[in-house]
Picture 1 (cartoon, helix red, strand yellow):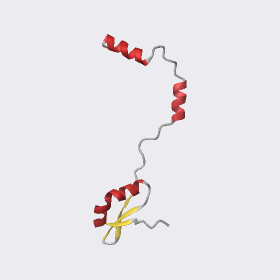
Picture 2 (cartoon, rainbow, N blue to C red):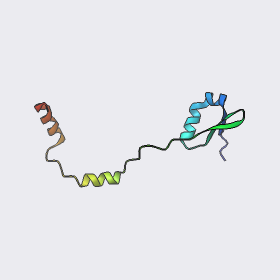
Picture 3 (cartoon, rainbow, N blue to C red):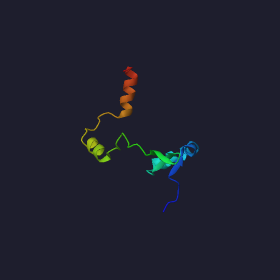
Picture 4 (cartoon, helix red, strand yellow):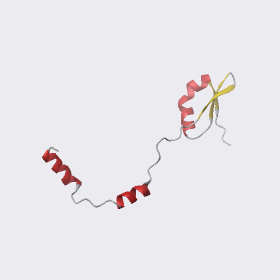
Length: 83
């Protein structure tokens, strides 16, 4: 069993906050106590943005028509025409 600390007093939390945040981000339960009683538990926040669905992105790109003009040529044309 992992014997790293999971409980810190308020005073210890002030000293070890970076370590505690790293551990909580990795999913470990980290508790802060006041006068020996647990008062706060640190936990990671669920990601608000979902990961990229590469299969869906590939399917989208496969359904798009091929460009008739290269991107470099299009940019040069826009530059020369000043938009």
